[in-house]
Length: 398
Image (cartoon, rainbow, N blue to C red; front, side, top):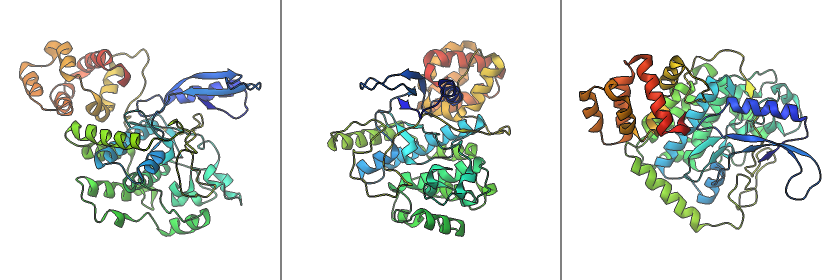
């Protein structure tokens, strides 16, 4: 549960409603609001938001426990899941503005969910402050784009894309960027073109690494207009995923085994501020993973990007069809009961197509074939029927 700063409960409920807008498979879920005395025996009234429990902490705490990056199949999955979550937020006209390893939380199977939008509503005009708490204004300073250091800067989606590029480097390198640089040096050097060193990967051999490096460098481009949208990022990261799901399964098992071998006396909850022997960091880059309740900035302009996933209520056939079209990448990755869904579609899937899909080796290949052969040309009725079957077999995906 994230406990909010003192504020009227009505305002807290408004925050909760905003979090509901961000309800997505790859964004931390809200379960309810809270007002009252905490169970630790305190007498003061607190307000807060109860959120999903993430058993494995964050990417930041995982890096510290592993003393480096996870296996490459898991690196690529984390990159893809973060891109899916961010694509969804942008499709809902929301910006994160504090994307970094400690705000990417991990569940028991090391699946990623975005958290802590708590800095996004603070005006970037506060960058005029002489204090070095600027990491608390427009996002953590090592993940801020060069234009964000200008006092008059107004955040746009390209802010998050830049942060994603730096985050990709951090996930792949297994460490924080610029470990010895304070705020003043980052503020000076980033607008001059300094970025994390890609040469740390020169001796690494991994299928897909070249494409990942290319994506991160495009994301942290000096010009906001040259950075890709998250829709484009999803297209790249989807192709980086291992063709065989067993590779990811093995990578997750390998990491979980190592985590068991490094048992800490403290909990693996998202607040892990004392669990690891972390290197000293400046006050602007906290070492803990504590998660504030969601606060994020609404984008007033309409989005042209496709969403990766979204919650639905009282959907008609047109809405269901749009969901199926918009969430192609996410559904291809996550739907496992493909043949059971096809059985429910009945005659909507022709016999030849059924045989072709059934012959595919993996669920992802089956889903791609279903999209290409049936869903793409089937119209609203077929897509709506697919959505209904999906809701039956994979309710969490819708």
